[in-house]
Every structure is written in structure tokens, then in C-alpha cells.
Image (cartoon, rainbow, N blue to C red; front, side, top):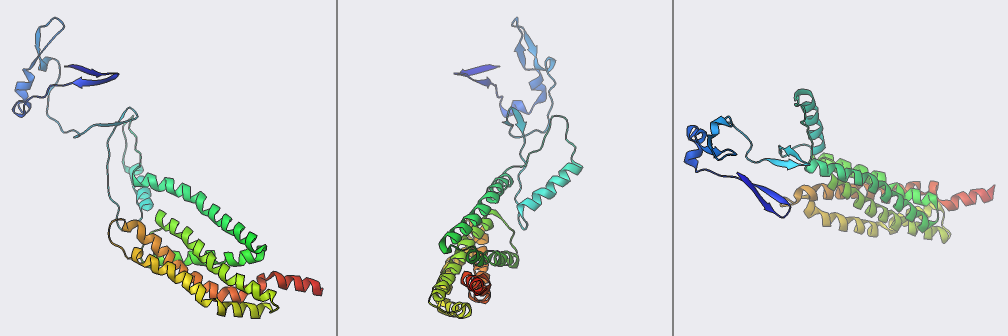
Length: 284
């Protein structure tokens, strides 16, 4: 026995007997090792030798031994599975002193991605509202277009439920993409309605005329995105578990947001029209 040095690194020098010797416990007990004075001492006088089950590989992390238990989760969401598993382990598993349990792998990546999305989504929504306000110089018109966001989100959630999918990180990314397309459709319609209002039409005529004239651009924008995501929504190859939730959210959300853009926004436009408010104030 000894050690091998490579720079500052040390490796234990070990002797590996043939398999015929390793399986004979009596022969192993009679193996002699020299003491400090060179006298041979049988190994059975120095250690207790016995056959026992042990790990095939010993791993270490932070100067502590680590044993990894892996499993694949199918048919349910990862976060819900881990939460249930943590509860069962806490209730039924009593760890000896010095032992601890850490949950990692994809669950750890999910936690980190969730924290990032909890910041990215509000920031994205805030930037969308700021850009809308700067485009129309009106808080009311920005709020009107921003109505696309909740209805688009409801369509995405319904589409996930309809396909039996869970709300995952890829679905969260899909919501961000969905909000951008939904708001773009609202901008296309409201921009034309504002132009009609400036030409002298009242709010009802401008909203109705804008909806009729912008049907094709709005549908074209939505259909291009939806048709582009259809192959991803029904993919079954490598990476399908990431592509399908994202595409499902975008397709389902665009259906509801397009209906909102073409029907709801023209119907409620007069309540958000800045020109109407200015005319009423001038009348007073």
C-alpha cells in the first residue's frame, strides 16, 4: 500500500488480486503485510474481512460522500411530483446524523428558470405597456391594447388544459411570445381607428370601419404565427417535450386574442377614446 504523487495531487496505490483470490475469504485473511520492522502479519489480525453489499461507485461532493437516486417523471408535472416526494420523505425517512437530502437535476433547473421568469415576465409586460404609451401618447389607448394580454393568456391556459399539459418553463416562454403577437394585432387595429378619428369620423364609425378594414392584416398576422407553430405543437421527436407546450400556448392564445382584437376592442373603443373625453370636456 502507498500513494502516488502527481504534483500536488495524491492517489492511493492499491493492489487488486485476481478474481479467484478475491472470492476466497480464507486466502485473503492469510495475506500478509509487513509491520514497521518488516515482520509479516496476516491481514485477519489487522482487519475484519467479510463480504457485504456496497455501492458500485463512491462519489463525493463538497468533501462529503454522495449517493444519487435518479427517476424519470412522466404523466404529471415535475414540480408537483417533487413536492409530493419531499413530503413523503420528510414524513417516513429518518436520516442518521450527518446525512442530508438535496433535490437537484431538472427540478433544480426548473427552480432557477422559474425565478428568472418571475422577473422576465413582469419586465416584458411593463416594457410592452411603456412602448404602447409612447406610441399613442395615451394611457387609455395603451390600456385598451393591453386588454389583449389577459385574454391571450386565458386562451393559452385553456389550450394547455385541453391537451393535458402542465404549465412548464417552455410554456412560460410561449406566453411571452404570445403577448408580443397579441399586442401587435391590437396596434394594427387601433392605429387605423385613430387615423379614422382624426379624419372626422365619430368613435363608433371609426371603430367599426377600422375593424372591417383591418380584418385581413390581423388574421394574416395571427395565422402566420399559428401555422408556423403547428409542426411544433404536434412534434414527437427529440425535443418535443419543450416544443409542444410552447407552440400550444401560442396557438391557443392567438385564437382568443384575435377574437378580442376584432370584436371586443371595437365594441369598447369609445370608452377608451381620448378624443371622446376631450370633446365632452369642451362641451362642458
